[in-house]
Structures are given as structure tokens and as C-alpha cells.
Length: 168
Image (cartoon, rainbow, N blue to C red; front, side):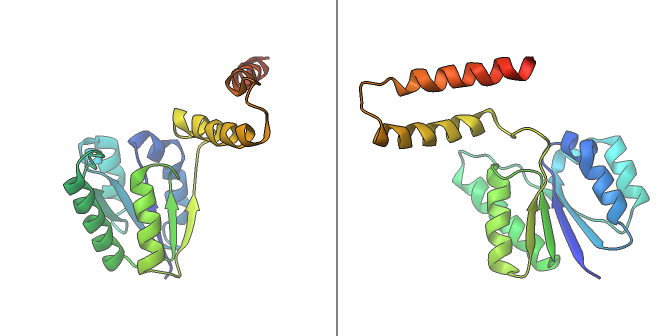
């Protein structure tokens, strides 16, 4: 039986769509979930898992982004998961979180046949996503446009136009 490994960040991401994906795939695939340890304190989540004993759950340690030992522990955790649950398909909730970057890279290295998918909700996961995209575009424009044109002003106007066109 093919294996599908999901990684969900917040519990909201699980209930807002991941729950339905998992429900539809149980029985046809062996399902694994990587979730934060905080899920263990959720009565509704634990009830769901209790009703679906075939799901293999991996409770991830908290990743402190400013602590190198935390990164080392998190990578070791993911390596253990991938050794014990050699997945065919990896479905992640996001593409920008460090946890997902580690998982994506490790799965490609440790289980090369893995197909990786990113399942996002309709908006970007981070306020910084659009800032990063705009910053890259600004840097490219600075190379092509004379220095006296205020690039930042152009992007500020673009941002406001996007906002007002989205509320009309």
C-alpha cells in the first residue's frame, strides 16, 4: 500500500482542509501525520486519532528558530520519521516554514521517489511572502531603471492599487 505523509503546522490548518483530505484517503493509503506536540492537548484531534487507529502520528518537537540545538533535534526527528515511514507522497501545508524546508530537502535525499506537494489555503502563509517577492522585483528593476526614479514609490502605489482593487 502506498504511503502518504502529511505535515500540518497549526491545528487550524488540519481542521480547515487537511482533515477532509485525510478522511478521503484513509483505507486506500497508509497515512502518516507530522503535527506539533500541542495537538496532543486537543480533545477533538485526539478523538479523531482514536477513531482512526491506522493513522501513524509523529509529534514534532518545537523548533526554536534561534537555537541551533533545536534545529539539530528537529532534523534528527525528521530523519527518524522518514526512516520509519518511507513515504511515497509528502503533502505539506506550506512552502516557506523552516520545518517544511527541512522536510522537503530530507525527503528528497532519503527517499528520492517521494513526490512532494504543497497544499496551501488561498493566501500566502506569511505576510513576508509578498514583501520578499516585491523586494526581488525591486532589485531587478533597480538594475534596469535609472537611479533617479523612486522604485519604492512605484511599489507602494502598486501595493495600494492591489488593496483597493481587492475590496471593490
